[in-house]
Length: 464
Image (cartoon, rainbow, N blue to C red; front, top):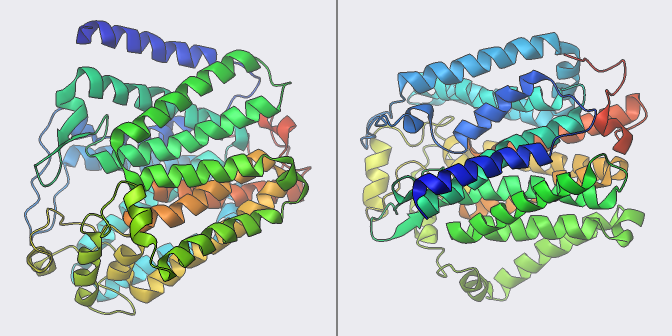
């Protein structure tokens, strides 16, 4: 099929997905376009990349440069987001109080610039990292949060996932590229590398699965049949891309998250919410026993990885001793700056990897030390606990939030996902803040149930 014909068919198909998914009385705020654009850009390519402009060249040992166009675009979105949050300040204040581990983490990240070798650069990165928090708050503080989440997932998925398939199959110059080592061709879709494509498919497929399960369970939802068709089609795109990306970390994380969501949908868990703890604990214990009994190599092989996680264990072994201060780290987002980059490349044997440790916990350790790792653990623990509480009020949504927390914990074993502009990090923050929103609405109103998905949550919620 000629690429031009395929393009027309895909554009018509994308429009058809939006048409099928329309309906319902819910009308989330137009401000929801801000986080959709933010995540759409950060989850695919920069604005300059979409416009075909060459990105600034990164030179080891020098501070990386950012396109002025990308800086202005990001600053504009953040400014508009702040204006929205000012109008919703009462709800935003409540959400920040409930999500205090997130506030504590970002506060510590700012303080860490005091001992950084590159405080100016680190402060700029910290400001940019706040964009994730701003956009999460714009989504969750909507007057109709559940409807806003549905619309948010659909807007991203209906565009990015089909376009990724189009690029890979019909525009290989856009949808494929060479691995960092230059010896294999990998599918990238709308992103810039296969791991980013895997992460995109992971987070959007979990959100789509939530919508599918919700539509299957609730037969009274308006326009249920055509909306279910649209979401099932989108889920098929997501699962296809998980296989196409060949990202074992994303594939294993999706299997874990989807398994949790499907298990939570069973009557056993609906009647016994506390059993969710036992399920997650059992999965964690199984993984720990595999390591203790020496079975991790076979498990990794089954995932399509080498026993050393494609050289990752060697990278981790060499990088850990390079942290300037094990307690507090090098400073937020500044470990990979200056002479340490050249030193790291020489130490780890010239790997084409100059800006991450390929492990989220080690990456945080390098930048923020043991204190930062402890704060990440606090976010995960609180997020999981709040997700289970949300499960008792809205089972489908609570299962999704728990899945995002658990998959974030596992994804970061093989990839550095606790960092700014990274999709697993954004959706971890989204799950933590959303869980607090669900709990808050359940305590102040009548709960966030199916009926509230398509109407305002009451007088206590801003309608902006």
